[in-house]
Amino acid sequence: MSTTAPPSSSSVGFSKFLQDFGWDLVIGSIAAFYAIMVPYTKVEESFNVQAMHDIIYHGHHIEKYDHLDFPGVVPRTFMGALILSVLASPIVLLMNAIHLAKIYSLLAVRMMVGFLVLLALRFFRIQVRRKFGYHVEAFFAILTAVQFHLLFYSTRPLPNILAFVLVNLAYSFWFKGNPYATLRCLTCATIVFRCDTVLLFGPIGIELLLSKSISISEAIKCCISSALLCIVFTVLLDTVMWQRILWPELEVFWFNSVLNRSSEWGTQSFHWYFTSALPRSLLVAYPLCLAGVLLERRIMQYIVPVFCFVLLYSKLPHKELRFIIGSIPMFNVSAAITASRLYINKKKDGWRWLYIMLLGSFLISLGCSVMTFIASYYNYPGAYALKALQQADTSNTTKEKFVHIDAFTAMNGVSRFCENEYPWRYSKEEGIALDEYRDRNFTYLLNEHFHIDGYKCLFVVNGFSEARLRVGFPPFLLLKEPKVFVHGNMRDRDIDLFNWPGCP
Image (cartoon, rainbow, N blue to C red; front, side, top):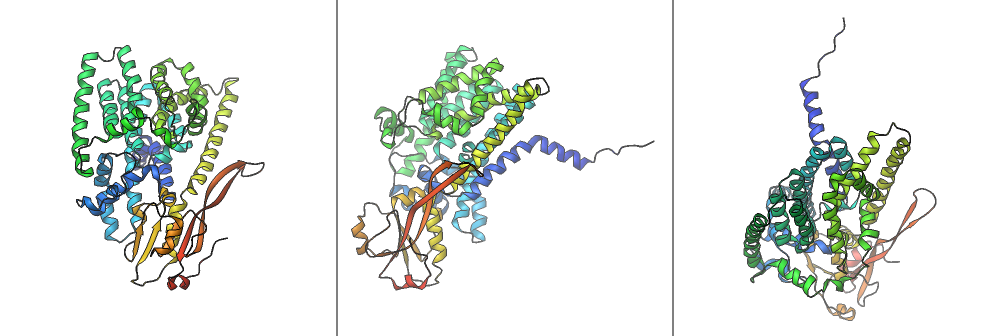
């Protein structure tokens, strides 16, 4: 008689670990890969990035903080930057102890953003499993993994992403049947991080009232108490940091909604979110989420408020994908319901071909995400130019190296985390005319202009220009063009000590 040995405790434990955290490892690995490959940040993230740098490296010396010199168009709260800096500080201290470059500190705080986002997303995924089953949970994770924008943004310290953490928690409590916790999360997101979250708060609140999940009196008490608490915290912190009495999101609301000045940064048509932003971010999940509403009536009560959120946001002329990123997880749930139904019925006639088409669409979505990632990789020419300059000038002299960074370069990847210690010095002084540079004592210029009097063009960094489809493999072609020019002061003879490639 043959006997089968029982599985060892270690294999059982590993299997249990994969069952509990397997999807988190997959999604987290992709998000970490994006952050490691593209550690730099854009102008939209500049406030929180500079704030985290200053909290970590300047501490209580607020007079040294970047926001006092470059406050931006509207003030933002320090709440997110402070929380992230405190959480990442042990890792940053260790990095500083072994003398790693500052850019690794930026990676540490970005990983902390991603950790909070994915923790909230895990909580939401667990509620999806409890409500709709394991198959829907699995396809929800797969759809999230093959999409680009959500995981790429998940490690970026944008106010939208900080609010996104609370939005995912709100969705989780909504699915769990805890409406008042849902309202508290949305209230906090609205008051502290993004006032426009009120466009999501409103439809969800109406749905909770119509479904009799909450009473008006209790909802008002819950929202007012949460709002007052959040206002106290943000006003106290930001009054100290900005050195004037301030509720940041109130000023943002006044600027964007009352004065309607956000349109100064560009406008799009009313349908842009539905015809451009959502198709690019959801990919195959876009048509699948529409079918999910028809296949599972329970999702209707969740999809309609989120759809209304996007619809309401469409009324604002200035549009960006990050403004509606909070809608993506809910649309993915609806799409996962459709994918699950195709999987369950895959052995039936007719359904088999639909399931094969589904698998093919996953591969197409993955290919689109790869293409978008490559384009994004080349979309930070300012940071690559500064990195190349600092690597090329390897002189050990104590002579000061004064680098001027123009606005275009600063908006395309450069932050204080990219700066080296003395003898390197940096300036982001604005308003300098091209003919004034020759009278200044800058050693190097990082500039969007090819020719500047008194300076020699040392090298150029190309950036992403456009993508074109073609016949063959790969089926796309990414075009690049010169973006940032690095110039050296011709009066500085040390410039000629290095072998510069020059500018074409």
